[in-house]
Length: 252
Length: 325
Image (cartoon, rainbow over all chains, first blue to last red; front, side, top):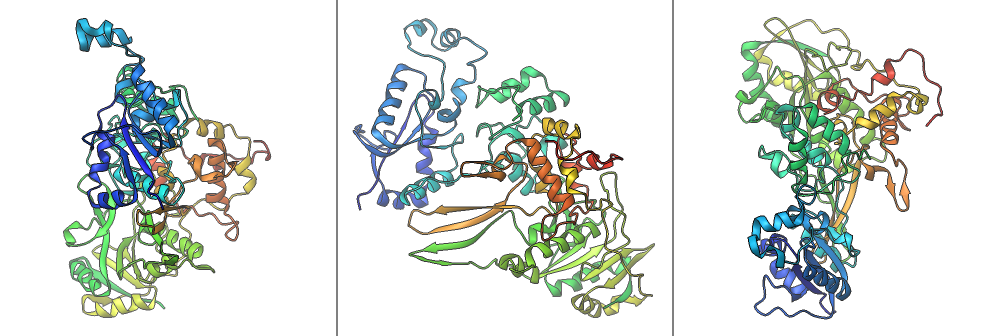
C-alpha cells in the first residue's frame, strides 16, 4: 500500500506546532515508515510544494495575502486539511489585539516606518476562509493528540478527542482549585481540556491556550471572575490571549 | 459477624502497621498544595485523621478516571488486567462507605463489570467516625456496616468493630493491641437526609431550574467529585503500528457531549442536563429506580464555583406541577 503523504506547514505563527512532530522522538521512526513526508519546511532542506497531499497539518493564523493563498493551496491540494494548533483554530496569540487595537497602530508599533508597505490584516482562524476536516488544539498541541490523529488516519478514520473543560482533568488529578481556593484568574471552566491540566497541576492557573470548550458559559465565567475581584479589563485581556473572539454574553 | 474491641489512641500507630499485613495501606492525607486526598500511607505522619472530605472520593480505587480496558492487534483483542494490588483503605467516612455500597450494586450486579470486580475484591475498607461540617448533609450516622472494620472515636481511643470476616482477621492480628469492649449497637446505613424523590420533580416548572442553568459554568466538578457518579465515556485510539486500545474515562452529565448521539442530542440545553442529573441522583434509574444515590458527603456543594445546590429544589414545601419544560 502506498504511504499517505503528509504536509506540515505554517502560516503566521511561531512554528511550535510543526515542531511537535520532532517532540515525538520515540515514534518518529514509525511515523517516517508509515507516512511520506512530502512537504515540511521546518524539517527539509529543499521543501518543494506538491500538487497533492493526503494529509496537511497546517498551523498558524491567516494574516497576510500570502497566508491566504497558502491556505487555499493546502485546502485544494489535500484530502484532509487539519487545523493544527490554537492559532489555526481560534486565531491564537497573534490575534489577541484584534478587538482592542486597530491593525495599522499595531504594525506601526512593531515595524515603524515600514508599516504602510506591509500587507497585513487582523489574524483570523482557518474557519473564516475554508472548511477543515479535523483539528488539533493546543499551544503547542499535545504530542499524544498528534499521534492519535496520525494513527486514526492510518486506520482510515479521524480521532475522537474529548470535549470536556480543563476542570474535569484538574479535579480528577486532585489539584488544588486555584480559582476557588487561591482566588486566581483561572480559565479552566471554559477552556477545552485534554492537556491533563498541566498548568494547574504545577500551581499556574489555566491561561486558556487550548481555546474555548464546547458550549462554554462565558457570561457566567465573566460574572464569577468579576465577583472575585478581577477587573473586566484584566479578565478580557487574559481571555483574549489565545482566543479573541469570545462572546461575553454567551451562556450556552 | 460482630466482634468489637477497644483500641487506645497510643496503640493506633501499631494497629495501623498491623493492617499493612493485609495490603498496601492507604488513608486520608493532605497534599503539598493542601488538597485532602486518599493516598498511600508510606509514613504514618501523612495520615490526616481529622479530615472532612477528600476532593476525589474512594471510587478512584475501583473506577479510576482513565482506564484502558481493551487492547487489539492483528485481528485479536485482549482485556488487560486492572493490575490492582491488595489495598487496605483506612479512615473512610460512613457516607463514602455507603457510596461504595451503591457502586457495588451498579457494577457488581449481573452482568458484573470485570475490572470493577477485580479491584473490589482487592480492596479492604476500614471506616471511621466523623464530625460533619457545614457542607455535610448527612443524618450523622453513628457508624456503618458497609466495610470490613469500623472505628468509632471515643474519649481516649476507638471502639473497633469487625463487619466482615476480613475485619475479624484484622482484629485477631491486632489482638494484643486491643482490650475487650461491649458490642456496638446495630447500625442503620442511612447517611443521607435526602430520600428518593418523585421523578415528576425533575421536570417541575420551578424557576430555580432556569436560574441554575443560567449560572452553571459546566465545569463538571460536582459530578467528578461525587462519590456515586459513575458515568463513563468510551474512546478508542489506533496506534501507528496498527494495534489500538479502548479506554473508559469519567463522563459527566453536565457536558454537552454526554447526551450527544449521531444526528442529535438527548439533552441539548444545560437545563435538560441539570434535570437529568437530578433525576439520576435523587430519583434513580432502573434497576435502581426509586433509590437516591446521594450520600450527603457535601462535595458537590463545596466544589461548585457558583454555589449551585440542587437540594434547594427539594426544600420547597409543595411539589410543583409536573410536565412543564
